[in-house]
Structure formats: structure tokens, C-alpha cells
Length: 157
Picture 1 (spheres, rainbow, N blue to C red):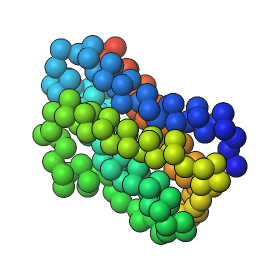
Picture 2 (cartoon, helix red, strand yellow):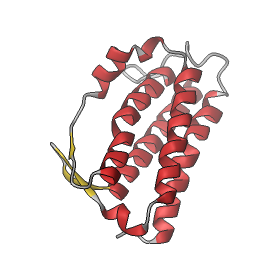
Picture 3 (spheres, one colour):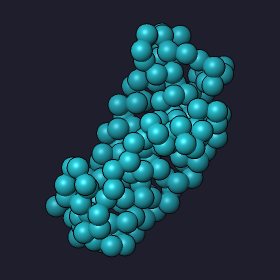
């Protein structure tokens, strides 16, 4: 079981991430039109669209496990999710606004649960059992990776 300090640190990372993306992308004149500086790398807009899709898939898993422990967690293709929902044509600011709004709900829920709830599990069809803490850490780690990717794209622009 993660201790109180680890849980609070993780909640802090999750709460801060949308603001970090907003601050980083505010350095661009037009985040929607910036292309990647490296061949084969995603543009900042593509990264944010990917994150929105990933978070649409990952964040509800936390809530599902909290509401129904041992629930099955279905795997989805976030690339197809981006395509089906048309995120490539949604402005970055709108993607980030929705990300921030939804994140507040998840953070609020995590702050309200008792310590033992962090160990509740759901079973992912590919990855196996995952705790609430592991699901939340997966989101935070994924966002850290893409913050660095956007920062590199901006520096190369």
C-alpha cells in the first residue's frame, strides 16, 4: 500500500498536469499549427489529442474500480479513439480545457477516498490486476513523458 505522502504526491502531479500543459503551450503563438521539429515525431497538437484520448480511457478506470472493485478493465486503442472523436480537428485549447475539467473530478474523487481504497483493483484484459494507485500513477507518468515531448517540440520550433 502506498503511504499518505506517496498518495498526496501523486494527487499533486495529477492536479498540476493540465496547468503544466497549458503553460507550456502558451509559449506558442498558435499551438494548432506547430509541426514537429523531428521527422516521425508528433506535433504538440497531436500529443494533446493523444493525451485526451488516453485520459478518456484511463481516468474512468479509476472511478470504475472505486465504484466496483475487481471490475474488468477493457483495453482500447487510443489512436482509434482520437480518430473516431475527431480530436485532430479540435483546437488544442478546447482539448486542454476538457482535460482540466475532467481532471478536477478525478482529483476530487481521489482526495475523498479512504487510504485502503487505493489498493482496490480492476483487472485489465491485457495487463492483469491494477490498483487505483497504479492506474493513477500510469496517467501521471504518461503525462510526464508527453510534457517532455512537447517541450522538445517547442524548443526545436
